[in-house]
Length: 198
Ligand code: GAR
Image 1: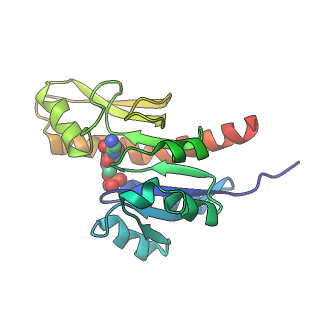
Image 2: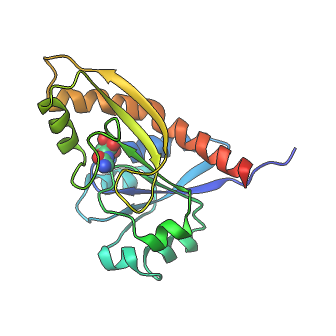
């Protein structure tokens, strides 16, 4: 049987990086892929401390480098990156990158899209909006990335009940548990599916 070449994943982060760490650890023992680089859009985020601790290469980039052909795209090409995973990443992905990695960029959103998505709907802002609306459930959405915020094909959703006692903080904790349980597995599933179709 033909064995697939191990795929390389780049994780993009803008904050704490707990999902990035969870992805890194999961893929350490995967036959499908490895997380081989972290890309961060800020130099002062905790995700970079995690990368250092994990022995994961990390590269910080600015807005110009994100958009230019010899910026982020070159960093990815030089490292033979096959898939991009956005794990708490804030910026809209530019068209050139979407085109270069067509169908191979995945994002996790901490709510049940199409609700509570779009520009500015990031991290704690999402959980505050969900609680303010009195929702009785929240969840996660894993989707492909296109040129608009949070609107690519949905690949997976999981739900968690909320009660009147829930706060944005407790909602975030529940949603993080779902993220840790499902995100790496779904990324691996999608890589295997894409490779089988290729
Ligand atoms: C995660 O909950 C992720 O779903 C969310 O940011 C958090 C990052 O946490 N992403 C978005 O809101 C994207 N719109 P982490 O840095 O600890 O992984």
